[in-house]
Image (cartoon, rainbow, N blue to C red):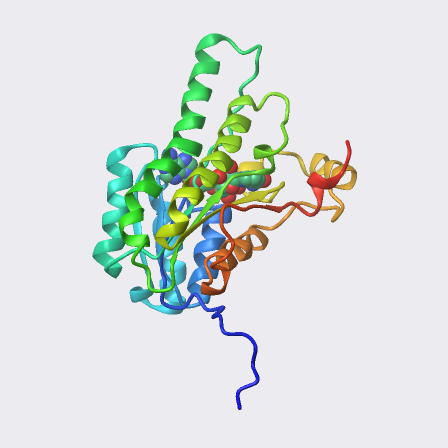
Length: 265
Ligand code: NAD
């Protein structure tokens, strides 16, 4: 007699996944972790040399059938179409989408009009509108995914809290959590889960300009784990949400921040 209780697979092997912004940082780490677990990965970014580099890294270990790259800007309709088409051409369908591409632009209440408008429009276009449009494009394929479709939207602790001088970024990331809940409410019955991951401070190109001593003081004061996170630590959460076993996690906002968001100032 089989006495095993667990019935649900924790394997993402064979799933066909798009990871946007995967030339660098958390996107690159996510593409790698998916490939390590046997998934077929679309690496896409508007940094063309970066796409080639990550594709080569993964292909060197798992072969060219496991990964494909496409240079595309997620803030344009043509770019998003190219990403979807690339996955269909290479792998036949789409089982999971990770909306990770993002920009962090300064935007102060006291900035001049042109600077504020430019940062606002770009932040919303890349960090929020692109997520919604790409989800819509992928839905017809995700709903046919053998183990259920999966969407993971990378928000931020800025989607829950706020930092002075980052108004557009904060608004866009609050929007990511909102659009995650909206799509989750509608797509649950279509066998697709939609969740948001909120990283705290992580060592990537986005935070590379922050001096080391500042990072250390900040982490000691603000983060119970006392350090910045590594991209791979966020990637594992994203991959977990794409497991067949995660089918009842839907519309959730999951913080990966070393405990930062539980503290009073
Ligand atoms: P990163 O700069 O290393 O990676 C972001 C990637 O997105 C880059 O490769 C960049 O070229 C790509 N990109 C930007 N605009 C694009 C566009 N229009 N089209 C296609 N690709 C585009 O930074 P990261 O920290 O790995 O950021 C990944 C995600 O994590 C972002 O959404 C970011 O807002 C979020 N995040 C980062 C941190 C952090 O501390 N690093 C914290 C919370 C959330």
